[in-house]
Length: 364
Ligand SMILES: NC(=O)c1ccc[n+]([C@@H]2O[C@H](COP(=O)([O-])OP(=O)(O)OC[C@H]3O[C@@H](n4cnc5c(N)ncnc54)[C@H](O)[C@@H]3O)[C@@H](O)[C@H]2O)c1
Image (cartoon, rainbow, N blue to C red; front, side, top):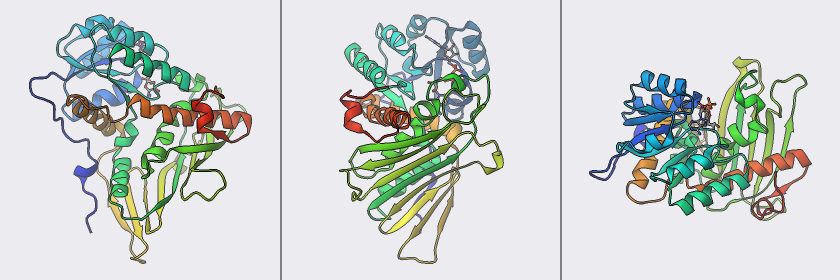
């Protein structure tokens, strides 16, 4: 049985409207731009028209490394380049509002790095401002395009495992290196890195139902470098309280595992007719009706860098046809509400309701 092929989960191809320029102008030439965005665009043949960074050294070095025809330290100069049809915003959340206002002087669709913001209030402000300024704003939740995650989603859409009742994420990694920005960022493991898994938990849910409430616990090691906990465990409920709803999710991320040989990253999704699960390079499926069979598919490609091309290609294909971005700011507010609720839950030792976060009766 062939239920998944590489074309189902690979980044795909640009299908832009004729005559329009969709050269990429990247703002922010830091670590992720150099290690993932630009290598992905180069690998998959996406046109990179210009780059910009407040640091001259970063902008120049990035242009030289990737053969980018124009570099600058001034967003306005980047916007003057006619070849720039799309803005790839790869800076941290704090300066984004100011940069969006500069982009409004010559608007282009903007694909903004995740997290849209570190808390819901700031994310809403960015979404409202983009709307007011007439800027199409998409969020780069590119983990949705990681081969393993896209393949898993594709299988779920084929409706092979019946009614989905459990989504489980288990990840073991290490990000407590001193000197990196993430060790000084408040609640980094949940609001920044963990936002991928909160978002995927929503993305993998085949029903339209949003999460309802969450209980999250964290732990902090004595002597760790990071200012906040690097382990969380979140139980996510859907539907009414009472423990009888036919779907739940559990998300566990231990990001301070020093024994690197024990690192792993797995999603399990269980349905009434079978189960599908993945590591980052293999997809598995077992169906109730084929008791002795496990389907095992080795996947091509990897999250870094391929997902960054997949996310950009999907964004350009949608906005060039006048459609909404694949991940709108509005959709992303539900993900950020979940990470906000996870932090509040762990800090206050209680269950936090989605509606309380969205209505602003509780906030970070
Ligand atoms: N898998 C992922 O999706 C992933 C992974 C890592 C980082 N990120 C996100 O990407 C963003 C950037 O992370 P990073 O690791 O590249 O950070 P970084 O600190 O290495 O780079 C940020 C760059 O932005 C530049 N910058 C700051 N303000 C600017 C402005 N106003 N105009 C132009 N340039 C400006 C800085 O000079 C710096 O070069 C963060 O939001 C982070 O959460 C996402």
